[in-house]
Structures are given as structure tokens and as C-alpha cells.
Image (cartoon, rainbow, N blue to C red; front, side, top):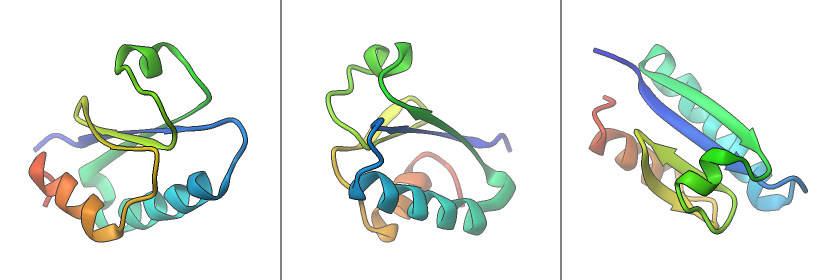
Length: 87
């Protein structure tokens, strides 16, 4: 099975939401290990525009926007991952 791609978009200011999402992503990486591929981006870039994101932090899983503008609970992230095939 291929890895589930998680793309995380942060602001350039490292606000509290970014810090919370970063900690959550670290937990997800530990829990799911080699089942996920995590790519992080800081500030606006081509992908930010391509996905039509309007707020950070944002989490895109397998090219589907799952979270935007807030830090989700771990349960929400795990459910989003399971929806895209990570177990």
C-alpha cells in the first residue's frame, strides 16, 4: 500500500494554531509511521493557491482539503486519514 500524502500549510508568523497543528502532526507521524508522507510548507506558495486555500493552518490529505483555519482534534485528524485509506 502506498503512503497517504499529508500536506500541511503554516503561516509565516508561527502563531498558536500553527504550533498546535505542528504538535498534532508530530503525533500523527509517530502513530502512523511509514504509512504517511508529511510535507510542510510555510507561507503562501503555488500549492496554497492551487488548492484555493484561504487560511492557515491548513491540512490537505491526498489532495483533499480536510482542515483550514484551525487546529483539529487528534480524533478528527485520525478520521480524516482513515477516510483516505490510512489504517
